[in-house]
Image (cartoon, rainbow, N blue to C red):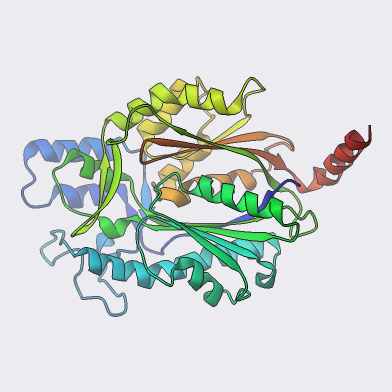
Length: 386
């Protein structure tokens, strides 16, 4: 049996912030000297991001209208960023993440033509907050899924976590013929925003955003809309260096990101070896879905793999319009490819994502267009009897 992605649903908070405005906000913070101001200008301008979405309405100049929240949580009346405790930030995550999770999941089920009652497994992913009963439990309640749904949660894996989640879902779907697995990634990165002159924190402030994405996976050919993305195989590689260059820890005033300038360089040096080991000697993938940790990461992947300029168009488009939504981001890219009518039946797609460690997660997928699916199945059947 071959598992396939039937559909992908996405959701973002309604509040949208523009890169020029956020850059000006950070440049206006207290104790920002001339050098730091120039660094903020350069980092934000080089991000290749135009707009992002956030649950922190104050970043867009709006009052915090979250139920139960203080009138000013993240931004004072003087325009200076506040420093709420980790507990305050996590309380907001607990309150806001489930709604975004449910919106993405409903969109995926509706687009795939699958009833909530058909779901057998739930896999949730997040690294920007914690609560229990967690997002997996809330999905069962909020979507009225069967209470017998088997659940698991992949937490604190970072930006690469969506591909391990798809790997878990594929294993479940190919083990049980009737399995319908709902995978949902939700990340509220902006809850951990902070004012800082630290270059690494400036980079984090310039790229991270909020969003959720859900995927429906099954190996049942008769389930839901035909076609989709077949999940062929997965790979994981740890780079020889980078353990201290991309780090995600919990501090007293939010989760703290270490994202050194070495990360793109390490990826550039290591990516060819990791991909060659994974893809092998066969035909190179026709399409690439690469997690846009930042513009420089995409540039290094493109150069390291000697890809044509348009190979990462989908990744660059998602980065430009949504920023880096951590684990959810690569699913936004796959959603764009799933909707791309110009992508031929049988086209191979290579997925790459990078996480703390430095970890490279890989996936190889095949596009199956609904109109061509019946012919493809007939070819497989004839080959099996030859």
